[in-house]
Amino acid sequence: MKKATKLTFLTAALSLFLPQLVLAETVTDTTTTLPTTSEETTQLATTQQEETTTEKTTEAPVSLPTDAKNDIYFYKPGEHPPYTGILRADGNIYYHEKDKPVTSTWKWAENRYFYFGADGKMVRNGLTPDGYLVDNEGMLVSPGWSYQGGKWYYALSGGKVFRGDWKKIDGVWYAFHDNGVMYSHEWSGSYFLKDSGAMADNEWVFDRNYNSWFYIKPGGVYASREWKGDYYLKAGGYMAQSEFIYDPNYNATYYLNEDGSYIRNQWLLIKSKWYHFRKYGELDTNTWIDSYYVKTDGIMAENEWIYDKNYGGYFYLKDDGVYVTNIFTIDGKKHLFQENGLWIAEVPNAVNYGDYKNIIFLDPGHGGKDPGAVYNGLREKDLNMQIYRKLRSELERLGYTVLTSRDKDEFVDFVTERSQMANKTDADFFISIHFNATGVPGANRSGVETYIYEPDDDLPPRINKEAHDNPLRMSESKRLAENLHASIIEKSGANDRGIRGASFAVLRETAKPAVLLELGYIDSPESKKISDSAYQDKLVAGIVSGIQNFYKTAK
Image (cartoon, rainbow, N blue to C red; front, side):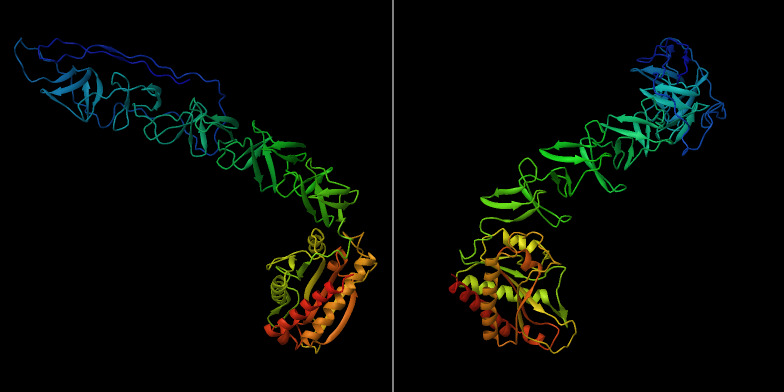
C-alpha cells in the first residue's frame, strides 16, 4: 500500500502592523492514503529492468541555500523597517527579503526549505521546477508514495520524485510520466497500468477509454492478431465482438459473438443471411451442408443457380435453401434435375425442334486465359472474335436475334458452361466458331471443316443425357451443318475438308441443334488469308447464307 507521509508545518506567527501583511500561521498537513485495490500483484515484467527502491539520502536539494536563516524583526508601531521572512497575503505564502518578494528559488525558513515560484508564491501540492515534490504546506515530502493534487507520486530520498520511466516497487512494476505522476488506467506503449498503477500481467483488462477488452500476456505486452482461448484479439489488441475476422494463420474466417466467443458447429443468421461454421469455428464456403449450399462468401444460396465444379454442373436452390430434384419450374420454364440435384436440361423447348424463332446462339471459341491455337503472332481467340463481331452485325441487320457465350475477351469453360448458357435460352441452334491448326507449323494444309455431334462411349454426356442423341436434334444439326458448309465453301472459295463427326463438349452438351466451324488453318500459309478482313467477310457471307437456307428449308 502506498502511504503519504504525514508532515507538520509549524510557523511562529508574529503580529505585524504592516498593511495587508500577516505572518504565516501554523498549518497542519493531512495524511492521504492510496486506495486499496483487489487486483493481484503480478510477476516481474521480464522486459523491464529491475530496480531497487533504495535511494541515496541527501540532506537537501543541491540547489538550496545553506546559509539562510529565519530572521524575525520587531519594531514599534508606525515603523516600517525592511522586512525579511515569510508573509501570507491573499491566501498565498510569500518570502520577502527587505520587503521584496523572492522568485524562482528555495528559501530556508522555520527550519525547513520552501520553494517560491516565478510569481513569488510558495509552491504547494506539486512539483518544483527542479523536480522536488512538496505537500499542501510547501514542505518536501518524505521518501515513498505521496498523494498530491489528486495524483500519485513516488518520492526518492531527499524529496525528488521519480519520473519518466518504469520502477519496480515492492515487487510490482509502475510507470511514471515525465511530470512524475503515476500512470493509472492508461497505456504506456504496449503495457497497461491498472487503476492502482500496477502493470497488468497475464490477465484480461477492460479499458473503459476504448470500451474494449484486452488480453495482457505474461511480461505485460498486449496480445494482437492472435487467439486467447475462444476469443480473438485484433490488431491493436482489441477483442473482436459481433463481427467476422479472418485469421491468416488458419486461412479461415470466423464470427465472434457479442461476448467475444467464436461461433462453432452451427448455422447462424447474420443480417438476414445464413452462414454455417465448422467444429472449430471456420466459416464454411463453396460446399454443401446436407441439402444446402454455401457460396464463396459463406452465404447460403437461396433462389439461385450455383455451379459446383466438383460435380461439374449446375444446381438450383429454392427459397428455403434446399436443392431441387426431378422437374422444377424456374422463371416459367421447366427444368430436369437428377435426384442429387444436378441439373440435366431445360425440358419443354429443348426437344421441340422445328418451332424456330429466328434466335441464334453464337459461341466465339476460347477467350481470356485460353488463347486457342497460336502461330506467328496470331491467336485463335482473336480471329474467332473478329468473325463473331462481323457475323453478329450482319445477322442483326437482317432482323435475327443473336445470343452469345462471350462478347469480350474472357474465359468461359467449354466443357459445360457454354452449353448451359445456350440451353437456358430459346435459341434455335448453336454455332461454335473456331480456326484449325495442324500442330506442325508451316504445314501445307488449308480449308474449312464443319463438325456435328457423334456419340463416343469414352466421352459420355454430363449435363445433356436426355437430349444428346435425340434423333431430331441429330438430324437438325446435320441439316444446319450441310447448309452452312456448302455456303461457306461457295462464298469463300476455301478448300472443302468436309463435314465430320466428333464428341466435342459444346456439340455433346448443348440440347439445341449444334455445329462447330473450323474456318481455316492458323499455322499454315493459309494464316495470311484468314487474317485478311476481306476474306473474313467472305466467310461471314457464307455463314449468313447457310443460316438463311436452314430456315427456308425447315419443315
